[in-house]
Image (cartoon, rainbow over all chains, first blue to last red; front, side, top):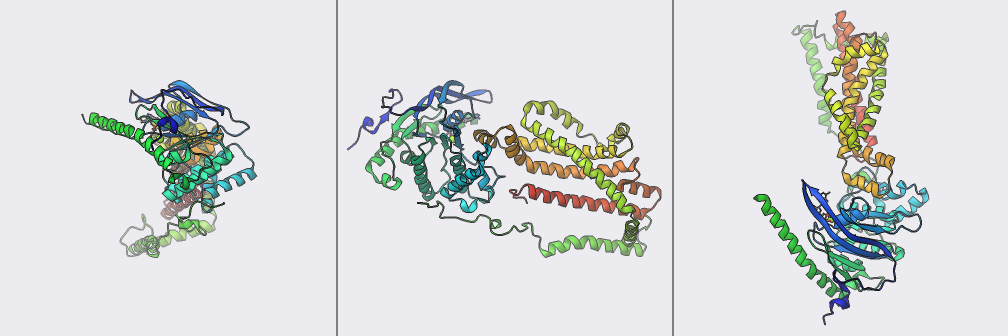
Length: 290
Length: 276
Ligand SMILES: Nc1ncnc2c1ncn2[C@@H]1O[C@H](COP(=O)(O)OP(=O)(O)OP(=O)(O)O)[C@@H](O)[C@H]1O
Ligand SMILES: [Mg+2]
């Protein structure tokens, strides 16, 4: 039996979001666009992005390489300015930091030990020593890095470095978590374990999470809502609401037939985009040869 | 459930277990060669002098040089000269280093400051520092200050230039991280700019110390009454060739010791550095 899009919670971008909202809005992005100047030529990375993200939502972003996912996160994190449009993020309750980013690729400081890297955010805002010790110790344990607390990054594998970056973000206990392909360098087992861990932490804290991934499986396993983006220029192609309840059991979830259907659906949409993206790349390469 | 996530814990570096061992361990034969070659050459030199094959007026036998060195030491003269030079080196080193570091980091972090100062510094860098000596003597007089300033000039240039390059080369992602995690200006400076540029800064300091040593010897040859440069110059005037060799040898030893010291300081300051 094939479920209709509506039954699965698929909402096309044209359609207004008619979902019932019992939650307050945490992040809203309004007609946001971003152009980069590349050698005098203007490249549109993001084109008219509109998003509403609820407080405590686990929001996934998928899309082909180069569609502007990282750029969107960087803008929301205040590391980059939008060319036009606007966004707003509600102030955090209490004194916790607004957001922390797990950056794409290597971003931990080579000159600090694993411990000092993970403690960076807390140290920067002068948290009490005992708090730093407890929190950092906790997340290094969760990420399996306790034995490497005194090691320097060059002594770690790529996947271990990525986990340091995750521990750094979690230890900072931010209001909103931005995660830019945080598990891309991990093997399947570690990835699954970290998925479970991340879901557990999220269940405890109910932070708002924006999570970029190339893996449809990851998106469906973790997310409440998935935004599919088009290849260049990056636009919103569709939102998909993930219909699975919380808390989730990662392995059990993947057994379900509905899981396969949601994944299949997203793949169908992405396939077109990946193809277009490949064509654009080919055209560009051809243009360069000429 | 307090399960840890990495069943595949692998020790990526043996240095993680147990105390640190010197990684740059030279084989016994390499060490023997390093020590043996100069000793062998000294021996050949000695024999050639005794055989009359080379002119002992210009190339006195190593044994004669060492006897002179022992004399100069026991009379205390040599120590006085060494002490005078080391003191000037020390003060000149800091006088050059501190402004160079401050300026270098500021230039590395701020484009306008870099734009304003880089041409000035790059433009004056190629001037042979020894050519400045008469001017420095004129400005600072014949006293200690002129020598200290000469050393400072020697230290300043390599350090400032290497610091600028080092700071500018730190990958922008680290500044993004610092900003995202709420580091203020001073903390960005302390946790990103300085450690990120440290390898380059240390290279600058090593070069600067070498240049400082060259310049102190030159400066002491003009208008000084003590110091190794003066000792060598004075020995030339008295045609006391052995003393000249003693001076040259001591300067070489100081240079070598300085390089070892700075390498050790580098290891202490940069425990993360693969090179060490
Ligand atoms: N600083 C920059 N200057 C110029 N162009 C940029 C810059 N940053 C990103 N771009 C361009 O913007 C587009 C989107 O880049 P972005 O890094 O956001 O992609 P992405 O979706 O994160 O890709 P990936 O999945 O490969 O990480 C790309 O075409 C890229 O070349
Ligand atoms: Mg990206």
